[in-house]
Length: 284
Ligand code: GLU
Image 1 (spheres, helix red, strand yellow):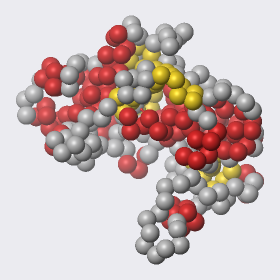
Image 2: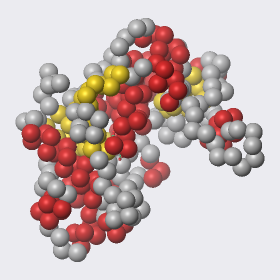
Image 3: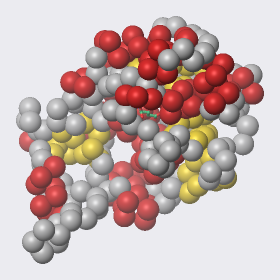
Image 4: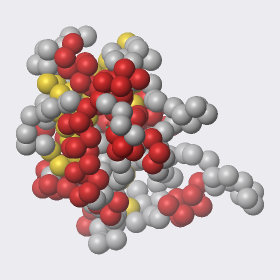
């Protein structure tokens, strides 16, 4: 589905560690798509999870990406600078009666969800709705905010929701149905108690603010897409197309992680590899 706006994609790393070959693959996939579509490649720093984000990791992202030969327009959006935009969107949702304050801890949620058997693993299920009855006026400093999914779906009426995937793994149109949202996601967190915002809400607002027409990112985020489509519809923001790419794995088939420092781009650079070696190794 060709976008009717000029093609813009983004690479959106979190500065919580050094970039590894998997990040290089993701950034280069976005870069290649932007070249192919005669569009623009943007960078966004996803540093809402402030306690884990550092200036050194942020600087290393810029350095590694420049070393790979990538360039992007400035200024670069940094989520830590976008608090006002996030608060505005959240206030709008509160005013519409679509969110409620929640102070449940992870342990409490797990306990409310878990089967009665001793030692049974906690099921992965949507939030059980413990705080759903609480009005916004009840919110205190220890509260986060959750979407009231029933109210959200009701406010959207019979709007058809979905997204078009252009990537090779799940190509085509994907419906986002009420049933799937209720079963797989439920009342998602829109503002965490510790940082005042959530990944889902920030990413939707940032993609719109950057005029992103196609989100290129790893397959691990494919299942996180439906709530983002819901939020775009609620906030009347355009839905981009998506391109979820396969993840780069190590020789044991394990997905590369930031803690796997041996494969950090900085380490690879230290071994004397050139950008062209990396680009060829990753298949570009
Ligand atoms: N910040 C996320 C990450 O580093 C990427 C989010 C996205 O591309 O939507 O995995």
